Length: 437
Image (cartoon, rainbow, N blue to C red; front, side, top):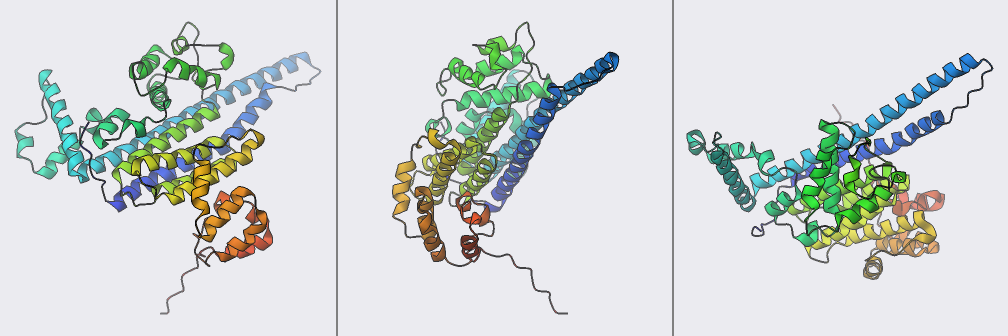
């Protein structure tokens, strides 16, 4: 593996890529979660017809129209989900490639690694008697022109494989593959993306081979057969009533259409968001506040739609960041971790199980004198009577203008007296004064 490279500092360009990714992905998942329930309800109503007509011929005619409407809406809803899934992947592809190209262009150590791979690729072309890249024109080009030529072959050299990112950025296994299901799940969603884009919505042998080739002998994943069983039982591949015990059986005599249930879609969203965040942290200035901003978005979505997986992602981003930065100065992210615990507890009620670092982070934050953090601990412990005391201690206009969207203030906004105090603490956007002519 390559020698560890220094973090890159090019804030504006990285921020643009990060902001575009966040904005596009959040808009996409919000649209999906808003539209999907309406479509499901429409289909459900058509599935259970309530046709009462005395004339038998007319009854049969209306029943036929009803069935056609049901089939038409079901097909269009499936197409909608496939299109959204492919679009989500295209956002990820574009953003990851832009980050990596920027890293190669801006960091000498990373560029050296890429050039080695570029030379290897050019030698492979020569061995196949194909036209090589490093001809006389290439050798006479300036360094800037050479880099442009080298990056023209980025897709062939790097491609969207985490092993390539790992080599290029020197990401340790314990960071990239800490979740032993991740490699299987990412490989599967990429194979599904290729299937839907190029061959259609029916599982085939090429889809199966693409997954098995990548993960069958990998040391960075649990047993693929066991992972398949777990995910199959969640409905991620087909209706669990089919009782398929192996991924090979997806492509058999009976054609099986690609399953795209809500939880699968959300799971893929979280996987891609996590991987983007990981790459972002390895190419960006470690001091930039990328993680907590993402966490707030995911907390909001998880709380709005009551989907715990988004709160799981908030906690995962915190633990990933700690592994990457290898220091204890991640207080904001640890606070978001605790908020995600509170929100998950609200959703799951009695079935809630404490998270791995929950008690450790509570103890760490309890000793902080910041009134906002004191409020968080009071919220965590359900000490409602202390809310007003700690909110009053927060400095006026010290909170960002969108603070009311934070899940941490969910209970406060239902109290007029507490909300009135809280609003004085939030920075108010004021219209600019008109200039005098």
